[in-house]
Length: 230
DNA sequence: TTCCTGGCGG
DNA sequence: CCGCCGGGAA
Image 1: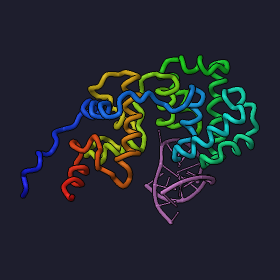
Image 2: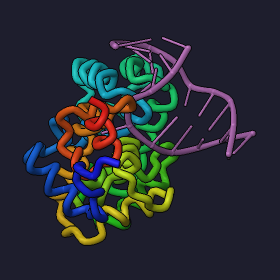
Image 3: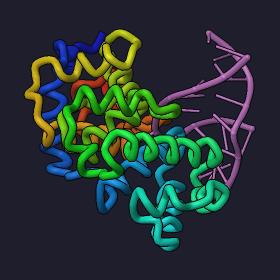
Image 4: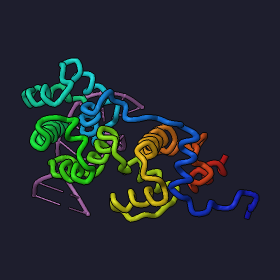
C-alpha cells in the first residue's frame, strides 16, 4: 500500500532504548526518597499501588518519627498499619515491613548500613527469604538502597517491552536478562534505565497509550500505528 | 468501576 | 493457575 512510511524498525537493542531514554530524561538519579530506609519502606508499600498513595503513607511515617529500623520495630503493628493505611493492603504491608527489618536486625546486628554493604547475591537471597519480598521488591532495594547493580523489572518494564514488540520469556529473569545483555553492568545506568521506564510508562506508555511525543515512537509499532491514523 | 512500579496461599 | 489483599483517585 503506502510505502512512504519508513521501513519497520530493525531489532531494537537494550542499548538503543537506553540511549533514547537517557537523551530524553537525562540522569534521573532515583529513588525519590531521602535515604536507604525510606527506599526500602517505599519498595514494599508501592507493591501493586499507585505511588501517590505511597507518598501519603511515607509522610505519615515521617510525621510519627519513624525514620529508621529501631523506631519502626518498636512500633506496635496496629499503629504501623494505621500509619500506612493509604498505601492499601496495609495489614499485609505492615507485616512485610516488620519481617523485612527483623531479617535485617537478625543478619546484620541491626545495622542497615552493614546489611546493605553485604555481597549482592547474598543480600538478594536474604531479601527473597522474607515473606512478602519478591524479585522486584528485592531488586529495587538492592539497586536504589544498596546501590549495587541489578536490573529492576516491573509491570511498566513489561508493558513497554510488549508495546515495542519484543519477545522475551515471560519470567522475571528472562526479561532482566534481555535488558542486561549487551549493556554495561553499571549502577548508574541501571538506576537511570529503570527510572526512565517508569517515567515513560506514566507519561506516554500508559495502559491507554499516549504516543504523542513519546521518545520511543520511532522504534515502536504501537506508536507508528497511532501516528498513521491522524 | 477500574486501576495502581507484587507476592502469597490455596 | 486463580483469588486475594485494599485504600485512594479517576
